[in-house]
Length: 299
Image (cartoon, rainbow, N blue to C red; front, side):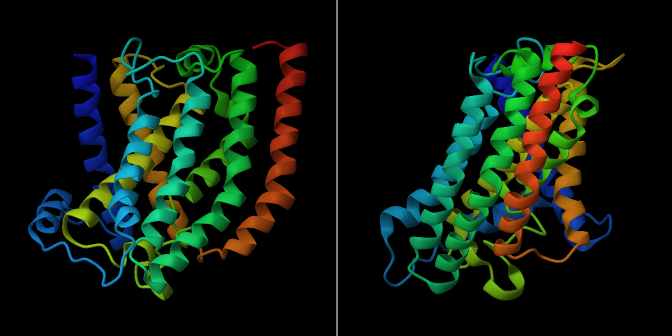
């Protein structure tokens, strides 16, 4: 029964994130109908490239969807409302999201087209930039909770949310999450202005629908991870725990899909330089400060 409720919450969340992204793209609150768009894609012919690597072409979108679903499985929405409460849940989430890179390279390589291939290799450059900025903030969060369980991480924030305890870690994690979900200004794998869709360029019909659903799933998983690690998860007054989780996840997802559209697209080389020269020193400083505070003034 728990899995059914979580599945329903996932479907509603994916739909609402698609609505939020539609509003962010068009810059105004207009009727957004992602369900109709999905049905239109399902009704179109799924074209196949002339000389594809058929295994990679077919498996890329599916693997991306699986990676997102595995990450969602360790996000707690309320006490007891989680697919699987692993003792190493935070580590498992990071491991699951690592397959996003594999899926996108497969999706870029599979069609045997220039735009898709460039998009896939661009994402590899992004991975080198964001990978450490995902792991290191999680390390600091786990230090405070003294556990890698996502449920324990939420309960450790009963007195003070981690966004107040570790604001630098929160900022770094959100930026890295936007890179992982290839959201503007880090949307280099698709880059509509110069790659004509990039990794999506050769996908149509059902395959494109699966690819876009997978992307919504990854965004949902990353927003849920942000809420779990930094915004107290289901914790909050008056409202039921699942409502708090849902509201916070939608708030973070809305921030992720809209905030980056206000700045120009960042080249992968620039993103890499900023991540390694500025992001990693800040992340190390954050870990050091969390350790000192935990020893001197336990919270």
